[in-house]
Length: 26
Picture 1 (cartoon, rainbow, N blue to C red):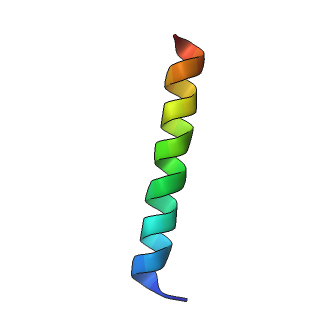
Picture 2 (picture 1 turned 135 degrees about the vertical axis):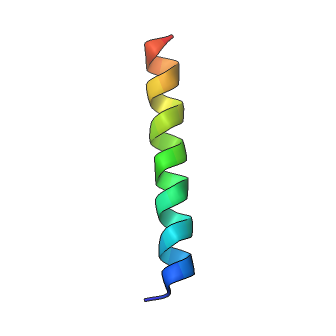
Protein backbone atom coordinates (compact mmCIF):
# COMPACT_ATOMS: atom_id res chain seq x y z
CA UNK A 1 0.00 0.00 0.00
CA UNK A 2 1.27 3.46 -0.85
CA UNK A 3 1.89 5.65 2.20
CA UNK A 4 1.09 8.92 0.41
CA UNK A 5 -2.18 7.43 -0.84
CA UNK A 6 -3.06 6.28 2.69
CA UNK A 7 -2.36 9.77 4.05
CA UNK A 8 -4.48 11.32 1.30
CA UNK A 9 -7.41 9.02 2.06
CA UNK A 10 -7.09 9.63 5.80
CA UNK A 11 -7.01 13.40 5.32
CA UNK A 12 -10.07 13.21 3.05
CA UNK A 13 -12.02 11.13 5.57
CA UNK A 14 -11.04 13.43 8.44
CA UNK A 15 -12.13 16.46 6.40
CA UNK A 16 -15.47 14.80 5.66
CA UNK A 17 -16.05 13.92 9.32
CA UNK A 18 -15.08 17.43 10.43
CA UNK A 19 -17.44 18.95 7.85
CA UNK A 20 -20.31 16.68 8.93
CA UNK A 21 -19.67 17.39 12.62
CA UNK A 22 -19.53 21.14 11.96
CA UNK A 23 -22.78 21.05 9.96
CA UNK A 24 -24.44 18.92 12.66
CA UNK A 25 -23.22 21.24 15.43
CA UNK A 26 -24.65 24.28 13.67
